[in-house]
Image (cartoon, rainbow, N blue to C red):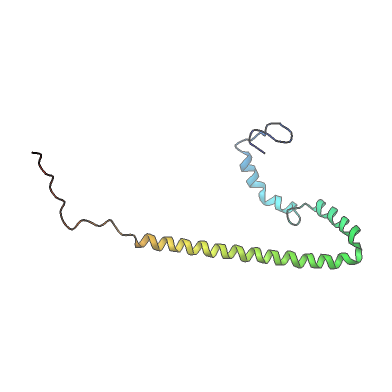
Length: 120
């Protein structure tokens, strides 16, 4: 979607300076309306009904258990990756600060610069 308009409808997208402020204020509340993996509760219910029809109610419990384990391990891996990235960022910032402290003032010449020559 571009700022000129919607690619689906062709109508211009109206943006106001206060819309960003309103979106930031309502952002924490929008997380309460979301279910799992960014899907709404209605979408999750439809997926659950389809899964029950495909796998049957007997196999659905085991499938849910396996999916829960997978989701938990993915979350743990994402947290590990995030903490590793944060550590490397902190190390890079520490290295930058050390480099800044090691930088010295420009050296002054030990000998006086030569006098300009006279034109003959």
